Image 1 (cartoon, rainbow, N blue to C red):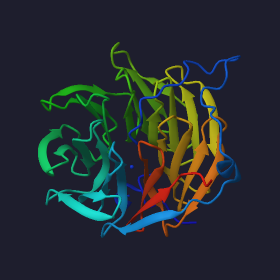
Image 2 (image 1 turned 30 degrees about the horizontal axis):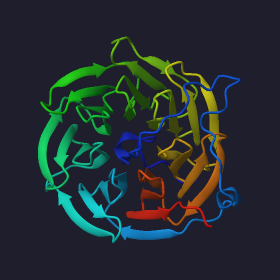
Image 3 (image 1 turned 30 degrees about the vertical axis):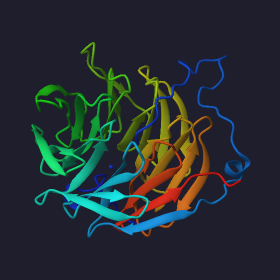
Image 4 (image 1 turned 180 degrees about the vertical axis):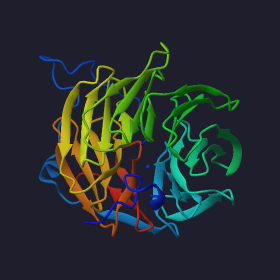
Length: 346
């Protein structure tokens, strides 16, 4: 088995959220209500028919550690340990532009909800705000004392959240660059962050194996959720904010009730560490990328594996879904981007 080359191993080895439509699900999973994640499935999806690889892009000279798809679904961002951030046209695979000329390893990226802005987090401890249309650097958010491992926008784009190896998450005012609040609670690296669709809750995943959930309106200490047996490296809220997914080096994805921390179900099937997860537009399908070199789709209602996508030659470090749920993007240790077709066969 490969030794871990990512954040789950020694620090010096160095080794990532899809924009979703504004649909909601029922408020609770408590019996006797129907499961809020249930949706009818087409027969091809039930059969697990293999999806085609639409396109492979030799994107970077280093590992593709972060990917994000624009809300319109036409463009994608990729970040790498070759110290570059790039914008791609997905229909053609054309490189639209490269951002900046003196970046450090780009660990995480996120589009704003309107697609006009992008965030990037890097190993130089800095979060950057970019204008997507021009590639212009608008602002730097400085305050972390170690690598920035994850970034996320609030739904309206007025604030940003970042997670760092300094064991904190920080909430920033996007317009001014002011630090609003530092979130303490983890005992190890903060590897993943997300903001709920209503902007009320912040969530973090850590190398300590815990999820942290903060009520940003109340200003109360975090609720720490235990359940994983390895580093929590990726997190995502459902559209109504009542549930969240987490992906871990323990090879599982878990669905949680928020903010209670009740475990709803666990998804199992990957044969190596999970590196990234994403949720589909209607919260019925989850996407994951793993050190087993595969991208997989899952039925959120049951935790059942729908499909396994094979094509990468090395670890899949980051995944993202288009807003319509028809396309998936993956970035890998093999330096490539791959675009997958998720549509069912007739």
